[in-house]
Length: 257
Image 1 (cartoon, rainbow, N blue to C red):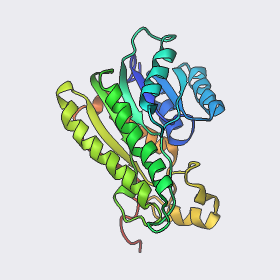
Image 2 (cartoon, one colour; image 1 turned 90 degrees about the vertical axis):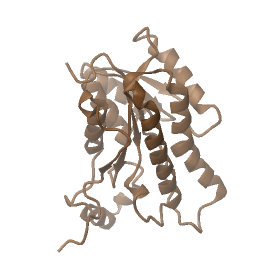
Image 3 (cartoon, rainbow, N blue to C red; image 1 turned 60 degrees about the vertical axis):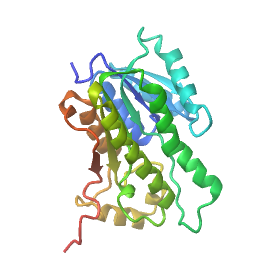
């Protein structure tokens, strides 16, 4: 039996990239996984099919984040979909992974795109948790996928980094608030991971340079992050809360000689 047997997990943005890897990993630990997606139904179906083919349990639910009422719509879709798998609408693990990037300097960021990135990356997780706290079981887990960019000066990612800093602030506050219920709340901060969001890695020179920024001289893989999330979701992480877990592979630790 896995560490999450008889548990239910919701992973937002779980059709591709880090979210998909997290969904697969939590399912491997025995969780019933709600695979949330925004638009790519085929990718979400593939994630669910991969889980079930391996003997796991999962279902997909679609909600566009970044719009008014998105959190309520997500939980309504969750309620509709979970009935086929269990009688309880409760959840044990919430992973706020869905997010969008914005590559622009301070002078280039526009009002509309600023609002969009905050709506998806910061506002949506806030209200998903607000509406989900009464569903979260005692001893549950909240894991927010932040970014190493929140710790660094990142001129080309300034608005994106701001959203992740906001998510970290939510992490620490909820950790204190939910402690009496034995619920842990933590952020995981990936570095540069080979996913669609890091489109610049298609340039071989940029790919090589980005890999050199890690202490391991390689790019991160979605599974690297998923394994950290699985640990935080497990009983072994019961004494860790309010933390920002660096999962950057030793990104820019110092000069290499």
